[in-house]
Amino acid sequence: MSIEPQSPSDPALSAGVPASAPAKLKPAPIAPWWHTLILVALILGNSFLGSAKVESVGSTGHGSRLLLYGGTFITQLILIIIIWLGIRSRGVRMRDVIGGEWKTVEAFLLDIGIAAIFWFVSLMLLFGLRVAFGLIDIHNLAKSQQDAIKLLAPLAPHSYLEAAFWVALAVSAGLFEEIIFRGYLQRQFSAFAGDAFLGVVVSGIVFGLAHGYQGWRWMIVIAAFGMLFGILAYFRKSLRPGMMAHAFQDSIAGIALFFLVRNHK
Image (cartoon, rainbow, N blue to C red; front, side, top):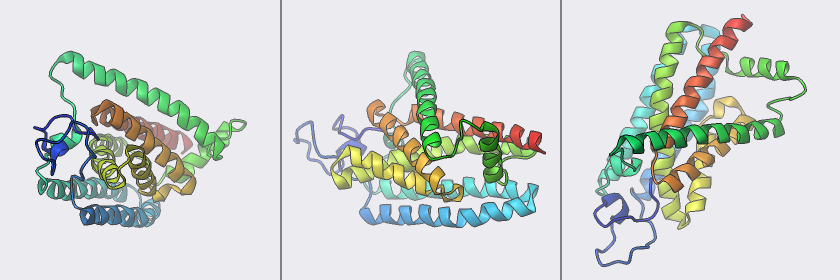
């Protein structure tokens, strides 16, 4: 994802800008402000309803978890379609929102390396944040593990079939959520505020608020995680490394929860 124009031929970066304009210009929104407002309202509304859904899944079990995974995929797909409808009116393509290209094997491997380094560094930073907010008690790790299981067990896969669905959902979430929060919202907030840093911060906050079912402390941690993804997208000018790191993180988290829940039982 690029916040500043790179070439006049890219409609995502030159929408509404005269061809004779200088190279450095204030980034233009890629969709109307009301479109962004509607999208944020849908995200926050789904987050509010998601808390009730997770509670209901905890009492009903297997079939409900599969329905929850499927419903989450469909919800995110609908948001992607809404984004596509909004940006196409400005002549912006989805590939422009994603940014970056893999013209060579080396370019692909470079993004894998960036994703791996980002994932490791961000986990270290978030570990410290979780300790600071009391989500991890370094003096009683067993209790912290039990608390995590208690919070996330209703959502975590309990069977191999559910684990397979979880991984599929994690991959799609890595793609969809990066487009929604870093590709679209971060770009929009940066353009509205005229400041890339504010775009990173506000889109990260919305990312945290989108996970309301995990409680306010986890929402703060997730918001910080979103900001780290935003920084990566801004400097890399592409969502691709973030997509890979995001999909990997969600997959690993789900598999870890799967084994934790089975062992807990």
